[in-house]
Image 1 (cartoon, helix red, strand yellow):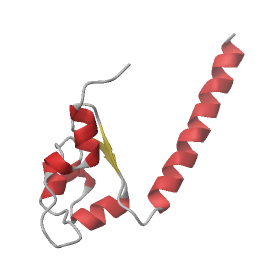
Image 2 (cartoon, helix red, strand yellow; image 1 turned 120 degrees about the horizontal axis):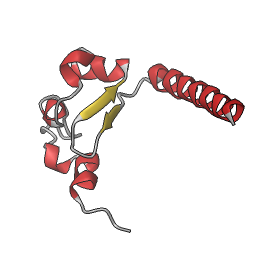
Image 3 (tube, rainbow, N blue to C red; image 1 turned 30 degrees about the vertical axis):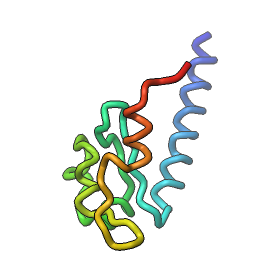
Length: 94
């Protein structure tokens, strides 16, 4: 059984490394938001787009995005309208 756990652990590490390399290589900014609305992870492009280092982004609520995110017509993009925040605000349907 220990061998199976070791293989699963190695497989998970390899999968995580692939995921991180893809996300870090993206030109698009990526924010991973927890169910409480706080930002758990971000990539380098998100840092560049938001003009903030990860330390200033991580752990914050989505409001860090609303100050810099704009709509196509140039208006600010309110946090309440952010698809991820709207999704998190809805009760989980089972």
